[in-house]
Image (cartoon, rainbow, N blue to C red; front, side, top):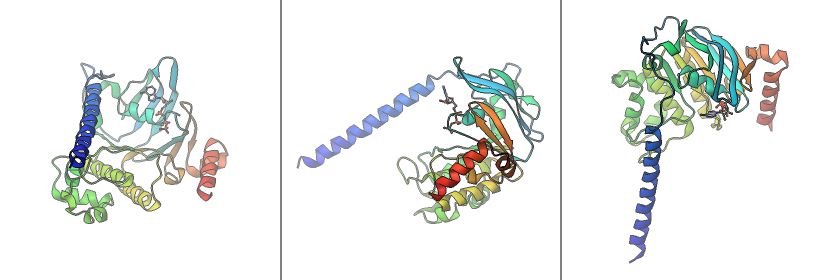
Length: 293
Ligand code: ATP
């Protein structure tokens, strides 16, 4: 008789503790002072060709530790640039600067010759689509989670995004299709499925610039192939930047930037870098060996 109520009390206790932790996170978030603000004269970012240029960018989070050191590179319109390098080299920091979560300490990030610190953050982020490592899903249906990419999307747009993101089979396997609840109180999606939801959102948003942050955790090869071909569809004709951990996924990139301790130490195509016999060739050989082991 006493077992069930006690068990229930245990459940309630865990729920309350979980909610308190969430409330704490919320207050932390609300208390975060934004590090960048729009300049009073900030205009809208005007997208012309979507050329990205990191112009002699240096950056640190704390003055005693420099993270990026005179970084220079250009992503030409419609091309795909991959960024590789050991953990902590500064790859994700480049993405944070492109999104203007921070401003460079010196140098500038330019899109179509406009310094992004002179345009509104809203207009900047409107033109960039990101597929993050870990996608946040809301407690809502899978359909609404996809629609989040563009709230006024039509059913036809959503169906097309699902098709291009290789989500058709997955959605067909769900009990209520697009109306299936996902998130904390619903179905849990695997890492690969969540990334494909993020790709579908990005397809709906149709941004001029695409950023893909490859998950560090390895996916099963079927899931990885589905993601790669979905990404090829979405990146087609867009300027795109890929942070890659598995070199096998970026062999086709137009340019690969190799980072080491906040600097670009090599750049070129996969075959150019292999023939240089440098850092990239070393990383490639190590990953090939790991895969065959
Ligand atoms: P990984 O492949 O592991 O994701 P990364 O190359 O993307 O690594 P970054 O995330 O850019 O590396 O981090 C570069 C360095 O900056 C790391 O040493 C990291 O500890 C530090 N760093 C990152 N974010 C912050 C922050 N918000 N405050 C202070 N230091 C940070």
